[in-house]
Image (tube, rainbow, N blue to C red; front, top):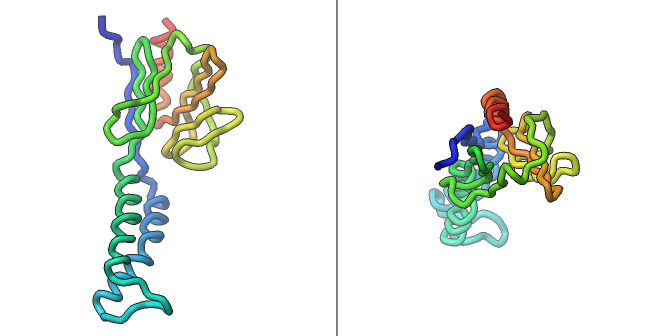
Length: 163
């Protein structure tokens, strides 16, 4: 029999301030390239060629921006397993078997950053915005916290699992 899916969530990095930082970090190189292409005048004492600037913009700025745009935090809980992790497609996620879980609760946390972080209190933290997350302690002593924007649905799934 297939395990019943109790909870699913996909989160993205959509904070306006994060995008402002990423775009502002990309603008200087793109601006120099546009200036050099439009005026024909190189910038600086040892200017990079237009080809080198274009390669830098397309090898650094474009992957950085598209990576943050397409990267997602996936969480899926069924009656047997918790699947979680960052990716683009939801494939190859980390997993914790429910049978290996000692403790599992929705808790408030502070992670001091976005993405995957280490915390003495909350173990490995996966988050896109911080605040509330599923805190898991396993029989091996591992701790994982997975951020959520659906705390009530997550609590309901945990309650259903405990019954």
